[in-house]
Image (cartoon, rainbow, N blue to C red):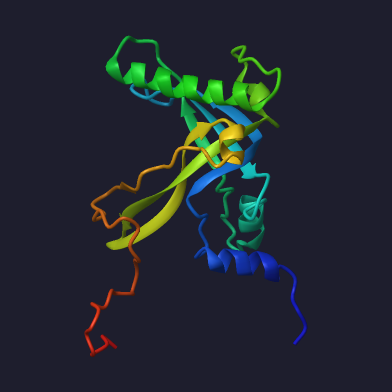
Length: 196
């Protein structure tokens, strides 16, 4: 048999179950877009598209996008940063702290860069991004996926000292700590009869 193109990438995707393993990665910001809120109750957002620049998962989102044969495929390496409303609310205080974590992480990850209220300058910058596993229920089926949770300095990723993200359950997902989902079921040890 002749080796086909993309085998290495397909093998890496199969090994991870098609999803990015949780952990911290060094990422480059590829696109930045400021999106005003469509509803006065929501916050404006800065949406960023990125990809992983180093290690085993380098170009993960590019490979995922190129291997997707669907007509409506989307770039999955993206994260939104909420812009504080400056309204004095408790939620706004949380948003300000989260926003400052992004600006600090950009400053710590890019020599000489200082946040100057121009989010467009984040394009092509490096940043550490910590990914965690989330469980949700879609059409009655439990699904696991990996999502970008929060930023950190690139140096923390390189040193293996980046914080870890906790498992997150949404939409009624049972807190199974990333247990297998789908058609598989766990067989108790010592049970001689298999369920199939």
